[in-house]
Amino acid sequence: MADEIAVEARPHRPRPVEEEAPGERGRRIGSLGLLVVGMLAVLVGRQVLGDRTGPAWLEAWGAVFVAVCVQALPFLLLGVVLSAAIAAFVPARWLERALPRNPLLAVPIAGAAGVVLPGCECASVPVAGRLIARGVAPAAALAFLLSSPAVNPVVLVATAVAFRGQPELVAARFLASLATAVAMGLLWSRFGRPEWLRPKPAPGGPTGLPAFRASLEHDFLHAGGFLVIGGMTAATLNVAVPRGLLGGLAGLPGVSVLVLAVLAVLLAVCSEADAFVAAGLTGFSTTAKLAFMVVGPMVDAKLIALQAGTFGRAFAWRFCAATFVVAVTAASLTGWWLL
Image (cartoon, rainbow, N blue to C red; front, side, top):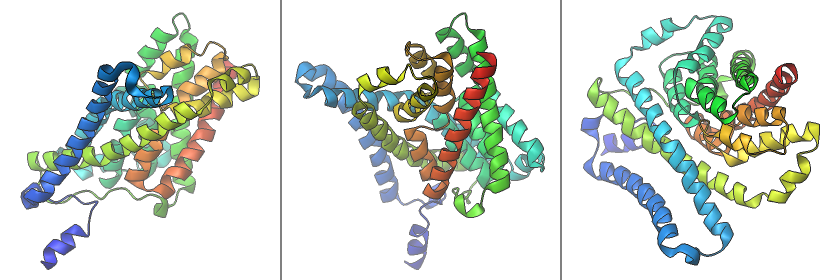
């Protein structure tokens, strides 16, 4: 009995597969089932009931919530699969040796590594958490967290398709996003405090396939819950912001950049789709659209919730606020230079 109580006192440390109680396993799978059933109920209900769904704002809320979750879930799954693979098959010593110990070298390399991993912000959070738990310097892991959803080939190709004939905008997005990721990594290495960052400890127990399965289930259920919270927040804010207010602010040069940067945080559009949303904002300047695309993959409603759940609220609010300021500054300077 004492051993069972001791195990339950460590909620963030998943137990080995063979020690997991059948009743607890059923409850965890049940929570995922409730999430899937709830989303399916919203989708099916909107189709079956048609005009009888109730007020327009309620239907819009449901549409935004489902859209955010459906867009993000595949990439969240990609992230937790990679995270579980790192936990199960990649030795900690290899990860420590893969990056230089000097942050001035490790942070730019980690930021550039985001180019080769197609994923969104939902995928990058569990990966960064697992890297930190495995001994990678937090500054390098956080630079990767920001760069992965912003500068990968999928996002850049989507931007080129959305803004055809404007290759300079694609280049501006790449440069501003990479500069923000590297700058935030260096800022963390200089000013970050260990007590602000509370990553999940690396799970002990089995290795290989059993460890992969246990980590995959734990990370997906953990991050998926905060994704739902972020999706609900984004849907609520999306419905609450008056549409007519945006049109009046589009003509103000300095204000329009901040307006679209804040809008990117509220809408929480996946990085693979935000370029098409930005292209539709015809009343705003190109620099303002660039700010929308730079800020969105790094700071949005669901990402704040995911970071708070993975690293702690003290980290999430400080890091997201600083990232917002750096991203807006980088987008403004890059837009002034290239656009």
